[in-house]
Image 1 (tube, rainbow, N blue to C red):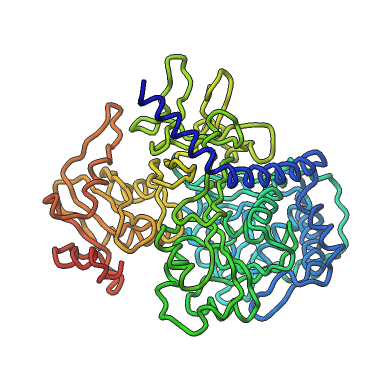
Image 2 (cartoon, helix red, strand yellow; image 1 turned 60 degrees about the horizontal axis):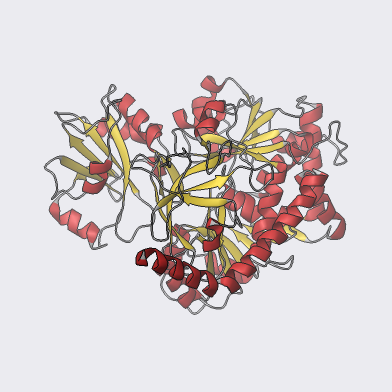
Length: 608
């Protein structure tokens, strides 16, 4: 009785204390919601939104790249040529798909934007992928052809026979391994920069596929519609209180949603100037920021850590950057980043394919956003933390409905599926099975559906939300989501189907989790041969840092590997007698993990 009274008094106290913050957040949320409602009703495409920017600021610089510039009008005209080329020469039409395998450069955006004018879908392929992974990601999108960067010609040549698709190359010809593949730059010159659409492209049409590991297996192409892209561009622009005068520094891969939607969207949707870099460089970061008068950038936690690891410099605060938007920073990282560089980290939570987006724009270090406590009773935001069992399945009450978590209780975050741009779940391309697996039925009432993020978060009494873990089949390393199924499958095949369990382990001083595999075997393996296979079959970020040889592991009744104990053991060789190896980055080979090396890793005196 008294405990219940105390609980409600405590709840009311914290709800009242946070009214100013929650009210501001609610007003911002409904402002964005109202703006997006207009675009939903008009059902306009991204290209239609961009055309308004071209009319009002045609000569403004859209892209800075390698000392070259591209204005809004130039970008529009070049994308018109791309649209005409693929319509007239290749006969592509609305609903067709093209795979784009290219490094960061303005032409990357020109190509998918031009294809989008036709209603053609572009599958944005991760440039780290090789062989089997690359083949899978291209084939699952069912493209008509592949456009690739000449710098990636060797990688595409290795899978060309399996793809059986026409190839088009872009960039300076070096090796010319695919002599029959025409060069895109030569083709577009033959086509007009005046484009007139044959078919109407709407906001509800699919713009692109952005790949995500999700929590259910191999990389899947998440469907991004035109209105979803526009919503992303506007939402983050308004949440961070940006203006068209801001200069957005983009150093992350633009085939991912972080840089591809938040970063490029600031320009294509909201009219900012973008400074694009091929790859992130810690040593050149602040030099570029100063040179181009950058005011904001997008990040993953690793970027902030790399910048903090640079020697202190007199230019640390000579820049004009006031904030950065991204995910993956720990509390001490964001605090140190603010103290040293004077830059606020706007930590966000979200998934490429999901309908849950949280933003910490109030400066609470360590939090990835906030959900008002009153959201439990008054549905201010369409996302909730629900109770779960150890298998990440929702726990239900006697009526079969999900149960909301209490403050301080870890829970599964889910997003209510509604018929609005911000709350719909479009799912994955060509896979209704994978899409349906992400949907929770009968959330709080019969017929109510929600998107299952597969992520575990916790909310404190002030409503701030903190990321706990991704307990599905993925973990994050080097800024990428690693699919454990992909790693297990690739290595098991190399070992003649020996069972392999892959999981992520934390390393002191490192963001994310390093890959570790347990190979179930009673004998030694050919480590050199395995390493060659790993390097051939897996992208660099997915290659295991640790390898453990163990005679057996626990299984469920359905013969699925139970990884809980393996995760708890981590790479602590004092907890087990199994032979364990680590990847020596200096010598580029796997070596036995000794007590000395183990302690050096713990003390952050050994590079992993």
